[in-house]
Amino acid sequence: MAKVVFRSSGKTLEDLNEIKSFLEQYDILYDNWGTERLPEDLKKDYNVTQEMQEAIIKAYEKELNELKEKKGYVTEDIVVLSEKTPNLEDLLEKFKKEHHHVDDEVRFVVDGSGVFPIKIDGEIVDIYVEEGDLIVVPAGARHWFELDEQRKIKCIRVFKTPEGWEAIYEEECKAE
Image (cartoon, rainbow, N blue to C red; front, side, top):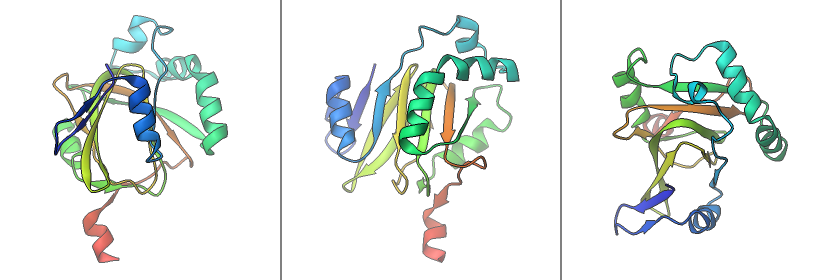
């Protein structure tokens, strides 16, 4: 279920249209593409082969191409975080640090779930994502990522360059 929670007040938005409308004000794209078209093995198997990656991306080719044309993205891949991920705890610690990117951060959730805390008007807003959700965090938005109690997520990531992007942490900003 789509959900946005304001940490300071506890106010919660759960209606998809209300969420989309609120986030749109801050150039955050949030949508639900669904996953009904994917066979269960492509959703639930976290040992993702190259063939599986290609099949998942192919299933969303139309939506991905529209998004790429609209936003100038050029490439995509699959990212998986689960108990099978080497150094998972180290990765999660890194993702929990507030950062931003010079490009948009794009995620379409194939399976699993997580939370993108984002600073909006000085307040932390938790944007929950789950199977079927698309989120586009705009370049420059201060945010981080956390797994929830499922402790797994499989996503299509989309980038403006084949190299992808790198996180810019607050310490790096102060050093410049």
